Each structure stands twice: as C-alpha cells, then as structure tokens.
Image (cartoon, rainbow, N blue to C red; front, side):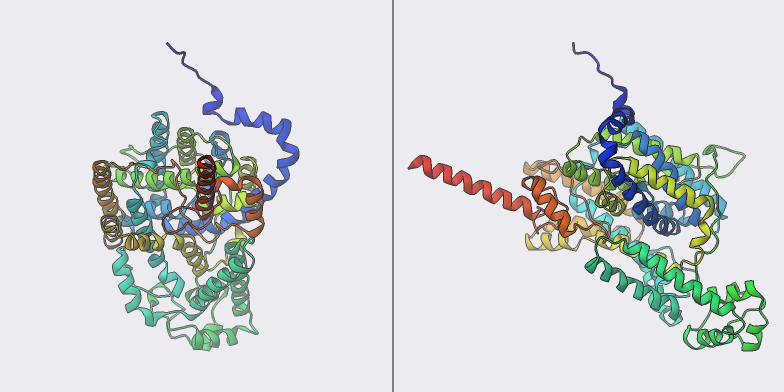
Length: 560
C-alpha cells in the first residue's frame, strides 16, 4: 500500500514560494511586482465601482470586494499573475438574484449579496477538496459561448440608459423589453452624458490602437471626472453660473422626470429661479443633466458575521439562492481557471486547479465577513498585471495595500466620475465576449447542431433571464456530451488546454512582448493571440506544419 502523502504547502502555497522568493526572487522580481501592483491598483478602482453598479450595489462594495478577497488569495492562490476581484459576469449573476427585490433598501440588498458570497465560498472549498478542478473541461464550447455571449448582450443593453443619458420610467428587468424601451425613449436623451460617452469610447479605441500599453479605462475615467468637476464648478460660480444654466437649457436635453427633483427644481426652470438656488440645490440641478457617482463612504470594511438562517434578522434565504450560487461558481471558476492555465503555460510553472478552487472559495468566504460580494479572476486585470512585470503574488498584495490607502481617505476623488463613464467601462469589459468568430466557424463548417445549441442558450438567456439560460444550457450540455460520446469524440479539449475568452480590449500582446515570447519559448505557441477559424493559434499551426515537413524529409531520405 502506498503511503498517504500530505504537504502543508499544497494547501497553503505561500509557505512554499515565499521563502524561495526572499532567497532568490526579491532582487529581480520585486521592482516588477511593485510596478504591476500599483498599475492594477489604479486600474481596478473605476472597474470595481462599475461592476458594483452592475450588481445593483453601492460603489463602496466594489472597492471592498477588491481588497479583502485579494489579500486572502495572496496566501492560498497558486496563479502568480491572477488578479482577483469584481468581474462583469459574476456581478451580472448577483444582479439577477437581486432583480426581484428592486424596492428593497440598499442595506438589505448588500446583505443578500454577502449571503450569496458566503455560500459561493463554501461551495468552492468543497469542490476543491472533492478534486473537481477540471470540471470546467466538460462544459461544451457552444454552451459556454452561447451563455457568455448572451450575458455580454445583457450587460450592454442594460447600460444603454446610462450611456445615452436616457430617462426611462420603470425600466424593465427583461433585456429584450429594456431594448424596446430604449428605442421608445430615444427622445429623452440627455446630450452631455451621451456626447461624453461616445467621446470616451472613441478615445478608448484610439489609445488601444496607438498606445496599447496604457490603461485606457483609467485614462477616460480621470479625463471625464476632471471635465465633470469643471462643469460643476462653473455652474456653482456666481459669475459663470447663469451662462452654464443657459447652456443646460439649450443643449442639455429636455428633463422629463420631475418627481425626482427637489421642491425648488422643476423641469422648466427660469434663470431667476436658478439664481435663487443654494449650493446643494445647484449641484442637484446639474446632476439631472450629468449624473455622477456621488459620495463614497470612506473607511475600511468592518467585520460582520453573515446570518443566512436568522429568523429574527432579515434577510432569510431559501431555495432561490441555489441558482445565483451556481451561476457565480460556473462563470467565476470558468473565468479564473482558463486565464490561470494559460499564464501557467506561458510562464512555465505548476498550477494546482483544485487548490485554485479552494483559494477562490476562501477569498469569497473571507470576503463575506467584510461586506464583500462574489469575486473571481479578471481577464483584463490579469493581463495588465502580467504585462506590467508581475513575477509573484506580491503584486496582488501591493494592489490591495493601494486600495486600502484609497479607501481610508481618498474616496472623494471619485465623486465626480460620471455614470456614463462607468457604462463605457462595462461595455468595453464585455463586448469581446460576444463570440462572432465561433458563429462564423460553425456556419462555415456546417456544424448545425452546435449552432442550434449556441442560439438556444443565447436566446433563452437574453429573452428570459440567466436562470433560464442556465437550465437550458445544462440540459443541452448533457445532450451534447451524449451525442459526442456516440460519435466517438472526446468530451474534453483534445490538447487538455482551456482557451481563455478575451474579456476586454486590455488583453493585448504588444509587439515587444510578442518578440520576447518568440525569443523564449516560441516553439510552444503559448502566446495570447487571435485564434484561427478552427480555434487553433497561428503559431501552433505553423509549428505543426514545420514538424510535418521535417518528418516527410526524414522519410524521403530513408527511402533514398
């Protein structure tokens, strides 16, 4: 009988890599970790606030969820560049769970989100100990792509009112109906946020194309916040204020929802009435034309024990929590493990998928005691982390320290960030998930069955909700596996590797990085580049062709 081998470093990886880092890596890797940690730290703040808004939670919850889980992952994670925090798909899953509770007080919504996170963490840990780290390989490609493409469309349509500055009464929670509402209310556009959003979008694509190493989302956040601050400052000025009032009335668009105004502000303001407003009322008046984030409560998160089964303190959970927990686990682990595997191959280190499940579980579970909602590994921030020179998880610790300092006394800097900018950040984060290339591949190769599965999951998710998409996707995934088994096809990717889905425009390989990769391990073809129509990387195809030519030459020489 073989002996049972147990190593504490398998479950607490920091005990294994930290001494080695201090012995050999601190001289060569510390500077890269510092630069990467600070870069991701300033990038994650506007993203975290945008994702919290997507989840229907206060902005500060996004910052909390960027801090505590990242610190916990530092001790238990095995992926060196992985940046853990709020992500779009998980935030959307949390928002779906809270959709039926729109009239609930903000504090109650936070409690529900924390309880979901509590159960997500426990489930992740149990899956890790059950060694289910490779379960993601059994989720079929058309099912994953159909669901994530639909989720991206849900996020984009959901941000149209903020992006265009629309004034929609009683927004529908159904994506299809909200799209119809957006068309119906197109005449209620507020011009300033609409123009600012389109300019931010254009600036982002310009930066990505010409200066791909720069954090585009951070630049547009700072730029629009400064412009908004100037607009508010001018409007509150006694000398320039009347001119700004005339500008709003002539070019700002017609305000329609007068019920949200104070008693002194109406949809048909006069200049004399405007001049009589106090400073707070002027700020409220401007916010009708250019909505901003507003005040974010400063301070670090406080320790709080979730009470999911309390009969005296709401909320009381029930069977409804199963669906959002499954959604968060499915999407969060899929997002985290695919990018972790890819960078483990690129940087040539061992990744323990089961320990990753445990680490994600502990990160979520630990976060639930500090008012955090569910988190996962981020594609875009991990790419920025790696490109900035991160060599270990110290980069994540530095990011967490920067967020802690910011939360402690600098949240006022985000007061004037426009909500239209957050909509732009969310749209940029998910538009790459709409898998047009996969649809073209299925059409070209006449894979009708896979195409039907894709659109079945896509339409169920978009036209109904993510719960319906999950149910349809689960049934079709089982059917697809049965069909593939009868055909004698493999149920998992033949090469055993999970291809990461690009989540945002920030996952870019610069020419310098491409040259470095070619000089180091180009024969392995591990670069994050565009796939060809068959789903293989161009470098891998070239390698296969060359190896076949060499084999043919050997056979020819042997025959001669």
